Length: 407
Image 1 (cartoon, rainbow, N blue to C red):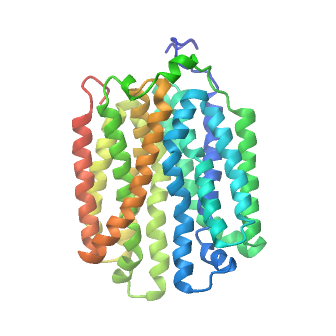
Image 2 (image 1 turned 90 degrees about the horizontal axis):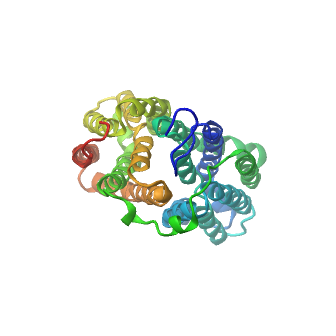
Image 3 (image 1 turned 135 degrees about the vertical axis):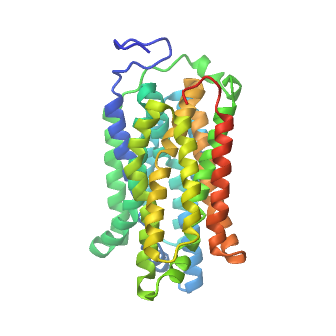
């Protein structure tokens, strides 16, 4: 890539509106993630409003409805990534934002719990704005700024996950549950308009070149495969602790009234740390190389998980979870950056789609594994076992790093 605005064939000029694209993608990813998670505080109430009266059934249907979106999103992420490579990344963002705006509004019109689950599945099938943004930012940003840009995008995604439940706790008492979904759909529609009118994408290569691309086009597949495994491991490490946090905090605090508050702080602390560190670690990765940041982050995370198994006070757990969030914040941007540098541009969307699916696998397997180990072996064993997995991930990443790349 040249510094005077020119570009080699197939590359994106540095002045190709990438900063504006990034701003729109951060806004769109934030709003869609808020919409996907805002129903957490009031989902059981909505399920009950839709006719489910038994307490156990309410809990069961709430879990099914919440997980449905992420399940369907995991299934179609590679497809949307492939279509982004074929027809354009902006087009996929337009599809995702408009689809999510419609799906969220329809959820507010659900007549029974089956419709709620079906519409949540639809939201996952039509959505994928955050993963699509990752593809566009990774491929439309100069390579020497890609990790920083992806870090900024990651902060927006994490912020959406953090703010969503807060919004879901405030809006329904003020405007009602159904109106909350309509409001969310309206905000996502604004993201659709911003995407349609403001994002600029570099010209696509010839259709024949895009259609013939596949994994066979990757000269060295080890980096891409290593990043798929690392993404899954990251989400597994974060989510394996979620099912046991509240019970673990109950063992650490003497005041039962503080249990849910401290558990919420412990869960939010990790996300807050990631929001703060993602752009900084991304900038560091642009300077010293994403492989070094990934290996270092996994190692630090493994070390921080050990004292979490040994804490004696609840505040110690919250502090350690925050520090772990600081360490993990750079992982997702660096994973996307490595993929961006390791695969041809014409299949970047496909591989990043598989990366998104692998992260969803970690989100599903993590709570199941953490709950099983916590219930049968002990809660402290969850932290120690996750630490071992992260250490193995750090070693595997170091071994998978190709020779001759920036460390």
